[in-house]
Image (tube, rainbow, N blue to C red; front, side):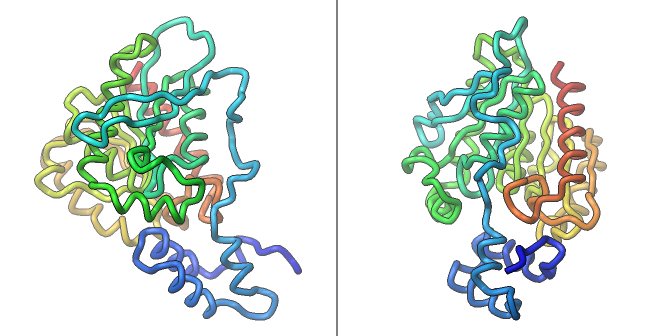
Length: 295
């Protein structure tokens, strides 16, 4: 059987996966609807396998990369979930204090992709903390399906507090300069937007395809924003015109990029939604933005 390629998959399947990944349909409904797109050698099983994340050999920065040190730490989130675990990554033997980046996961906990993003930030000469909002429930369970189910059990405001507490942890870390930004993906994009509202000392925020704050909250954004959107992500993009109007009306510093012909999740290199050109360009812009505002 010839292996599936991204170009073989109709956009409707990507849209269907987006509904599934964001809890609009359950796994049974997802599998049933995939049947509409199965034909010949393209079976439901092959479609399902192709669409799900692949964490084998996809890390861009290995966990044992010789240029960085990366270890789990515990910190306290008194207004959130209590004890939280996160992956702390920084260059090996830094010669000076470094700016910090809070890395916020999607709606499924601290999976291998987000850990890898934390290590990528360390490779770019930052100290990063990637928390696991599922830690109060036992931590990321090893697969995204169960992770999504677990994350729905947590209160969104308490999770926001967990990531604000991560900011505080970095601020007080002896290796951190005190200049801290946040980058987040999907749910993490929403958290990044909200940290720009709630954390006066936040120096920069980079939400990737994140839901926008309410109009009332949007007017309170304090940090410079670099907003990364996917053209085919109509669900999230629907809230962008109003958000942009509020940012403009309140003279809030922002830059927005709409990446053409890519889907929600285009930065995540473990799924077929990944678009290498858009992901690499967006990450270059992210690091340049943090270099400008945090150094």
